[in-house]
Structures are given as structure tokens and as C-alpha cells.
Image (cartoon, rainbow, N blue to C red; front, top):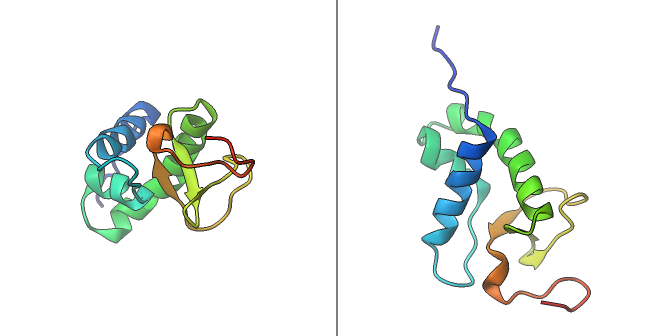
Length: 100
């Protein structure tokens, strides 16, 4: 029996921010990239991090640290569904109401 690793919310937050810091301005990341950076390429392993990563990403978006994107547009962190990406807020993207 293999022991499952646990990752603190702070470690997940750091993984997201570290990956975003390495991206060219205006580029986003997939949350799977953050999971893989922590646990490797085995889908059975990194897929277990997706729910905790989503929770951390929502909190970060609510705090203004990142933007959650759906179809390359900022999404409401409390109401988005489906596939999403993460970006830094200073990417010049406009929100649904037209503000930066």
C-alpha cells in the first residue's frame, strides 16, 4: 500500500504562484500544471490534487491574488464550472463588466 502525500493549502498556493511567475506576461496556466509540478506526471497521483487546488485557487481569486479564467475570460470565482485556467491579475485582461 502506497502512502498518499498531503499538501497544505499554502504549498498549493505557492505552486500556483511560482508557475505563474515563470509565465510571460498575459499567459495563464492550467491547474493541472500546478498539480504535476508537485507530484509528477502520474495522473492517478496529480488528479487527487485537483479538488484541493480548485479550493485554493478560488480563495486566491477572492483575495485578488489571481484571476480564474473560463474560455479566456475572467470568471466569477464563486460560480464558474468546467475547465478553467489561472492568471495573474496584472495581465491587462478585462472583467465581464469591462473593467481591468
